[in-house]
Image (cartoon, rainbow, N blue to C red):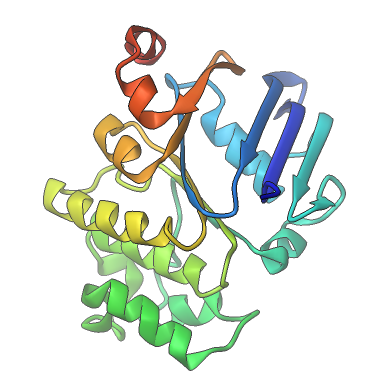
Length: 231
């Protein structure tokens, strides 16, 4: 089965500061993939480069069999890449309903709206509520639901449980595990147990370079893992 996302020898960064060095990762069409590492290891930079917020300095990135190096962010979204950033993931002044409407701009489908509300039932109870008044966990759910309305083949999630109450973390974990049965999900997450539950495969970055890679069950038992995650 061909890879959905194929990253080869990727260099990227901010301004003149290089963050990623020769990163190569392949993502299958379905399943969860975790990207782990210390703060500053390059995890968020990787996601921002995939979605097009940061330029590809060197290397190749192919999505669904086509190079995306010169494609704008909105073109990548239309092609099937969804993105939930770590911060500012919802429009605080808009209602939950209007936030979801933004997600369906490219794919208007009433049944898709019903599906995401079915996945996150709390959102269905708050459709007319301003997004800025939601709890941290509810805002994360809204951001994921909005991204799903774009009908992505690949969903990028940057710290989806940061600042979220433990009870809601469990719900988000279950929903992401469900999504990973149908599409590809890349999750950057500090919550190790959550990441390993969602992800079949795990990649570990260390100072912008790929340090470990393999099936999540095997890496979970690898003593080197905690070495690369320790502050």
